[in-house]
Amino acid sequence: MVDSVAGSVGNMERRASAGDRSARAKFAIVLLAVLLGVTVLLSLASGASDASALAVARDWLFPSMSDGSPLSERDRIIVYDIRLPRVVLGVLIGSALAVSGAVMQGLFRNPLADPGLVGVSAGAGLGAIVVIVLGGTMLGPLLAILDIYTLPLAAFAGGLATTLILYRVATRRGQTSIATMLLAGIALGAMAGAFSGIMVYLADDRQLRDLTFWGLGSLAGATWTKIAAAGPIIALALIASPFLARGLNALALGEAAAHHLGIPVQRFKNVAIVSVAAATGASVAVSGGIGFVGIVVPHLLRLLIGPDNRYLLPASALLGASMLLLADAISRIIVAPAELPIGIITAAVGGPFFLWILLRKRGLLDL
Amino acid sequence: MIEATDISVSIGSRRIISDVNFEVRPGEIAAIVGPNGSGKTTFLKALTGDLPYSGRVVINNRDMAGLKPWEAASMRAVLPQSTALSFPFTVHEIVKLGLMSGRSGALASEERNLPERALARVDLDGFAGRFYQELSGGEQQRVQLARVLCQVWAPVLDGKPRYLFLDEPVSSLDIKHQLIIMDIARDFALRGGGVVAILHDLNLTAMYADRIFVMHRGRLAAAGTPQEVLSDDLISQVFECGLKVGRLPAGNTPFVLPQSAAI
Image (cartoon, rainbow over all chains, first blue to last red; front, side, top):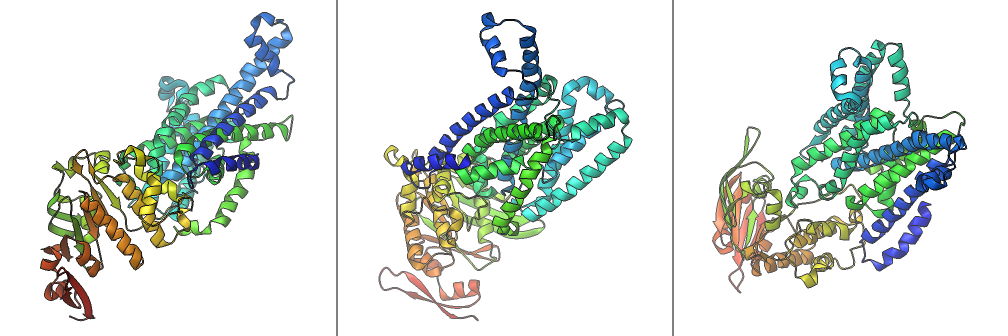
């Protein structure tokens, strides 16, 4: 698929002036949008039951033709209340993970930054676990006020704290050391893991069950309530991302050069950090830790359309959504009728991919 | 005009530069020279707003401290000593970043291919499609200069002069490209802009600078035209080695010959 895209894109490139990949990038974005559309339709149409998404769509579009049979009523429930929320959640989470990966890589000026790898997801996870375990007791009043938003907001807070600490530790005078960043990420991940362990120790049986389901990293159990809880936060972060593109491009030249180009660097970094933490936190809150999407998707796209964030960010959102839906489809099919947690699929693909990047660019760690 | 009064910079408790006075007028190249560690780059960073300083910097009658980053970006562009990238940008994409602030001041007819024109100026025709990371240090520096030129393509915008800050613009270049780059700076000044350049080559400085500011141990040791400033005693003392100044018959331009590492 990628090969054929690259092939047809190659023809476009010859018309543009040398080194200008914007036409190729726009063309790729259109193709990725089509790919996402196809993936969404396939995901809606396939599943363990034989429910026909086509029949449901026909009922919805042309109600007069509906035969009102119990079968179509059952199909309607399967498509609207089981498959559709799962697809919507997959699209939201996939784009959130890929875009926050791309933004974080731009912010830290290195292609190995990823919320999952450097402990941000673990920090967000800790925030969520604290709410799950202490929600019934100490944090009861908070839960009453924030309602369904408690979990995503707590995860957001955990992710934000981790990102801020990471940035402080790994960045000196505007230069981020990749080695320091990855090592600090290991330390932060370990700390979040330790506190999470304490929380698990404190949890009662019902909470343990909640934690286990949550921690598997899965789109299973997607409901409209979960979408209502995490969707607005993720949507906000996604809407903010195109406004970060110019600043991230300038930041590629270094903080001083970005400042000279007219970017208010400190304010810009704050906005970028908050939006990464928001997207990661909300994703982790509803689907647990799904790794590597944030590193695989932007990296593939940089090979295809280049690192210009004006195109990289929207393309990452589209491809991230498609890839997560595909991974979800695989997780449902591969051991049907049971399901694998989707995090296993993304890690199985993403782990080797990460090693491949390291092999190709060993020099990166010397930066 | 840029006018800097009593500029001092401290990092932590250490005074890096003290009470430097400086000015550059439109139409001029002002060179900052001095030995390693004399505070040249620190002073330039104060001028460009990258370091907190005490004193006052006024650019086109406006206090630098009160300018928004994008306002400053439309008045001046800054060429760093070197720039390493961690993403595979093409040369074209890097140069185009210079157009980000949106006020290059290019004529409508030249605006479309400004990156190509800027690359041609720095003698990098045909490099647009190459990857920046694969270029040599000298080529990378010229790509950055092309980007900076895009940012302030017109030396005068809305009747106000604009400024180029160049931090060792020729340090990694061969002699031909040193001359090409300095010619670009002179052309920018002749068309009404102002140039501030940190230079190491005293002969290049004598040839191109209208005014030289000599830094020594964080202070201004001398300021004036090349004829006024470049004398055996002064530069031998500042650079702490034996230097001899001669005069070219044509135009009385000074030149500097190294004599010995000791004074």
